Image 1: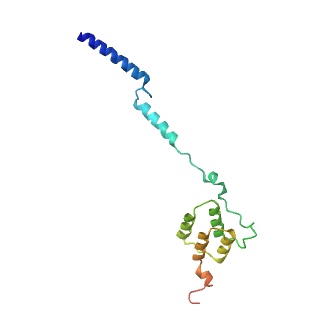
Image 2: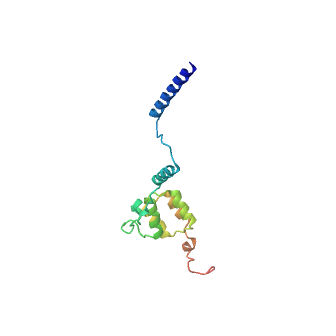
Image 3: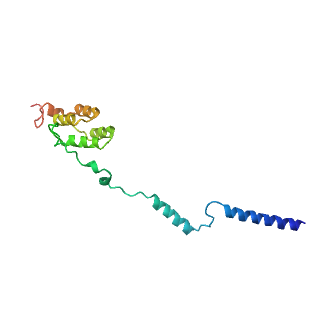
Length: 146
């Protein structure tokens, strides 16, 4: 009786394992190191990001043609740069940090150009605050005290 019980239990276990194997979700094959490495390499290759050409991504990155606008009296390179960056939707804080970090000084022509181009008030305030005082006082090209 004990032997018949063991045979029945073994047969039942075999049937359960066969059903489990048949309905188990996923892959049941045994992986070797080579297949694991190959699959990992394929996953890495699919995650690899393609290099982006900035010229393709931002086609409007060219300088704005401000010379054609009759409302702008004088066009300066600083004004062109600021208006171009603003029209490319560069955040104001980035532009203000860049201008501050490079020690940008503005002249009256820059401020006229920025005002006529309609830049945001924060950039215009920055330009007015950082005017080149030597140019305003007429001290450009003269020795101190003259």
